[in-house]
Image 1 (cartoon, rainbow, N blue to C red):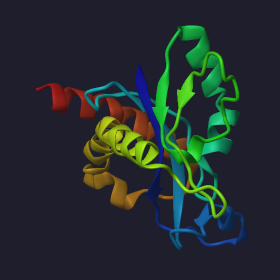
Image 2: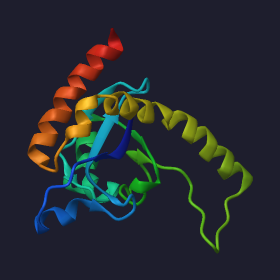
Image 3: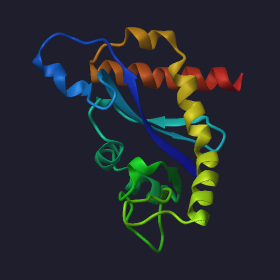
Length: 165
């Protein structure tokens, strides 16, 4: 079982119109979006290529073919509600998300309790991102996705060495 989540790495803005796609309307800053897989202890296993900050978790997972790779490896993943609807296989789900409420459908007390347990089980992925984002070099990151991907993958290796030490 692995944990999957997406995060935004804030970047310094380049001038020009081409950079507008890196603007995250939700967070009101320029950033790059990354997906990462962690194990149950929060150690980073894999990090995706950089995408514009406006990319949704579900969209990035579809483009990276996360579902097919997890199914081929025989792995299952816990994910947040950003990945809801990615895996529609009811009999053999690969990506498991929590329960959602709507105006017409309120959560039952047992569903709320299940979401709390699920959130506790997903906490290590947030710790993995926290270890990765502690590197000061990320404050100087520009919005070039190729360079950012190379840097983040190198930091992935260094983070794992530092955490295991």
